[in-house]
Image (cartoon, rainbow, N blue to C red; front, top):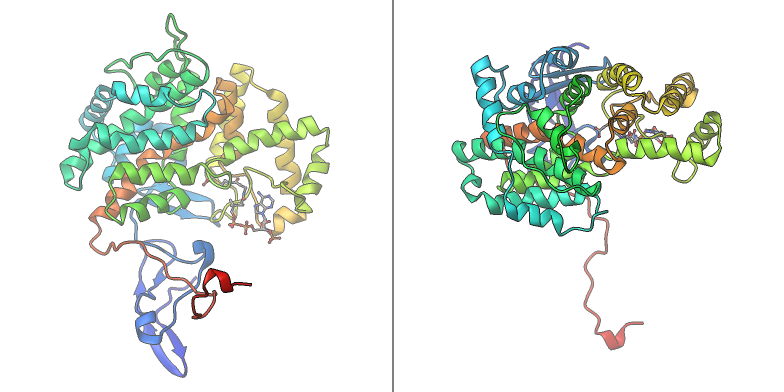
Length: 430
Ligand code: CMC
């Protein structure tokens, strides 16, 4: 598409030039900030289908071509060669770390993985069957009260909060898993590998410790990398908008967890696995289920399919499908469900309903199968997404903070309620 040079909007026969904001790659933007002042009109864009809320140098997506890059690096290369903490450094600082920088981050995070006794008591106060996303959101918000020296907007405070969030989130999520399975909490070890330590805390029995299977460790590392950022998605936009009020990073990230919990966003990994189970239980054939989805029957949506931005195969989904094949073969996971998912994908991808609407499997279609084969209970799937997304949320919060053009997020509305009317005393209301 040729680059647009000039945008004019004619309102009541008066033409106004709208300034352009250029992208380094991808869609340029048209700025409408002064439109209200100049014309009395606001722009309407429900669901932000066409609105850029900020300029960002973190992640690039081309939804038509199925491209995802973090700081310019293709996701496939990072998934193949990198580790989660290396990608976290890249997202947050803009460049891949040197070995010394990576070692320093790994050590610092590892030193902070233990959590305050008060946080443990906090986690223990919830019902055992509480949904872990609700507890996680509360725990992350509560971190600000235990580590007040990291609360604030100076570079030192933000740097400390960055390390604390990466470290404590892993331990809190691993503890939530232990609690749900009835296990006592065990202490993190200093100096261990981030993912290995997370898996050790999550899965070691009350006595003794597990050896983390290298294939599983690698798969978790890759899954975390795939989830690490996705530009202005619902939860990241939430983090930015909460932070734009100068709320601290913990409150902002905790709000992001709330946004992520919804089944149209991060909750889709859990919803997809439940969907596979429901199809099995209902006795419906896959064709019958697809027919219900197409009829938009009550509650029938193909979870793990479709995306606001991707109008082709989600590149993350392609990587997940490849590792699911390997890991399920190794762990002897639910082959039957994997085959069912593959058949469902095959049928959907050749069906006019899905072709016309450009609906393809997204990252969540196969992740639940993998997590389940690794032994994670279904409610833990979305917290795993949250752990992966943590560097992205942090990077966006920091970018927002350092952007001199940031203003408090405050959308306009089109008011459609009553016009002015007079108060009626209660004894005169019909
Ligand atoms: N199953 C059946 N129909 C669908 C689906 C689906 N999964 N997704 C979209 N459609 C239909 C929708 O009914 C609509 O049809 P019509 O034009 O006849 O009204 C059309 O496709 C456009 O859908 P939309 O809901 O307007 O699209 P959106 O961009 O607002 O929604 C979405 C994107 C991801 C919320 C949606 O595709 C969806 O609900 N998918 C299932 C949930 C899911 O897997 N979410 C995870 C997203 S990826 C991970 C993440 O970033 O969180």
